[in-house]
Length: 414
Ligand code: AMP
Ligand code: MG
Image (cartoon, rainbow, N blue to C red; front, side, top):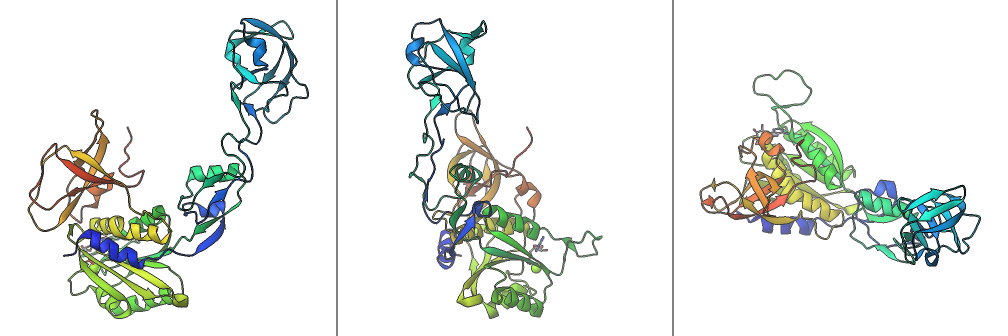
């Protein structure tokens, strides 16, 4: 058996970072920036008020209460035609430009309107109070983002704020997902004896999408070597996909056709990984269009095994192809709140858990249910994976290493 770490190294070494492309920001969502982004516009573009209130000269409001003459009004999107003079104020709304002569803004809550053209100020303010200077978020010429930053919703917001229309990013590999098996159906028809409903492909397509890559649904293929071979050769040689994920058919069964076919047409490694679930795993490369190399991930068919080998190996590999320098999910230490017994077998057991923050400030975990490799239902509500090292298990209160799954994983209505 090969340790997971070693398998990861072998796989990542073959999953080269893809080309840099220039994309409109909208299309670059989830991609990794390949160059620095330098601001050509300041944010905010002009000094403006952070509050609704009165634009004043701070020297006029040092002794309060004090009455000032209101000589105008300015809303967001407008510019005050008048400047402040001694003893005057201008009514101003959040985001409006600071009028000439003004050096502070008093919140409306600290004022009272009097007569027709007056305001009483109850609280003194200092020079600069409630004024957001031009460029105080992003200065012109500042490096806003460095290579490696992922275009998240927040990054997209910042790019919009500096009027960046296009960005240089690493590609989004197109990842073909195939499930294999004569027993699989997904057309909603009643199950005939021996049939089961296909589930891995739907899960994997979405996992690929969440990883930031572009999923391509290549459907269900029968356990038929010829058919599988022709589809795999077609999609790789014609440049339909940049990577391939298959599920099923890589273990020791007589109909494990993925194993037979990939053994012929790809340069494959067949792993027995020192982990449970997902011990069998295949990885290799096929020749693609224009001399490119297409990585192929042969995941086991059991749904939980498929998920785990995707999460622990294929996902980091895809993220690495997307230009991420650290493609792994963060691992944290947690307290396990129950005893988990197991027997020594040379493997790390990856149990699916629900993680919460305890009142002690630590992360606490409990298994979400049965841990069999076919029992996806219990795994589906987990938000993390707990590593139970080889040995006799862990006791309640022990420290374990936990990998958090995606942001929505295991989310439950409160
Ligand atoms: P295999 O790896 O092909 O030997 O399959 C192992 C187990 O996973 C078998 O019980 C299969 O029926 C099941 N399986 C394989 N592929 C899928 C799939 N796409 N969806 C659901 N179950 C699957
Ligand atoms: Mg099969």
